[in-house]
Length: 359
Image (cartoon, one colour):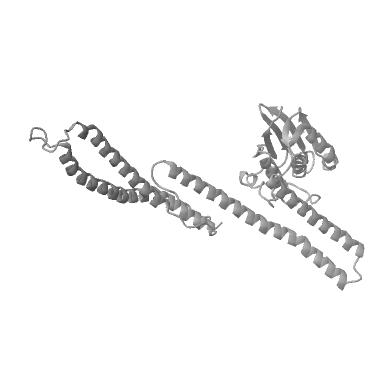
């Protein structure tokens, strides 16, 4: 928004310092006049012809007081200008850093030296904000690049299938249609996952009281056939655990966690345990599964978008789009909760979700 030019803060502080010093000098002169000269006799010849009278003192004192006031004003202007410059120097650094960040360079940091004060606190807060903003922008750039790549793949496959159908009329049309349907389904799933991830990141949803235990039961009923088909035992325990949020997003969160636990499991004879409990003012959801041992460096990357965890056991039946745990993390964050992933010593993964509880 355009603004009219005005006085700088340094000039305002300088005038304020000089004005304060001049007022203080004037008050001092007034005190001298009121409490000293009032007791001096006001005669033309002085006291017994020896001591000076008020008339002589005033005419002698007034020019000296005027010179002193002028000196105080000049001293206040010069000293105020220097002091204001020294005091506002840190603010100039912060302003330069803000302009640099506004031009697109988020890697610059102020790192102001010196002891802790208000300007240092502002500088540290600004550096922390730039660090988080840079990290967020880099994450969004990577996400956009990965999303573009993931969406381009099914489109390229669709174009190839159409070229084959056009150039080879003898090709089995049923097989082409089946493959095209599978590719379109994957593209639709990916698009819906991206939309859901964007919605949960914005956090624009209506909050209501949700019982996580009921959400878990509904998820278990939906995924029971998948677990039985893979030979996985699905065990649900716990009691009523209420939180505040979107029932639809929380259902997707639990569904993604349980489905991942089923798909990334042992080829046969694995288990998935889902437990809910209320601990103090926190609602806790734990999803634990069996599987191969996971290296810590892999576990720390599973919540990043399009990280499919290629070292985990899975089948081609659910290839996924690499957004399952990323969506879970986004939903948990939108509900002011925390998400913890830990590799089990015996193999598999333990996922713990903590959300604010409600009575």
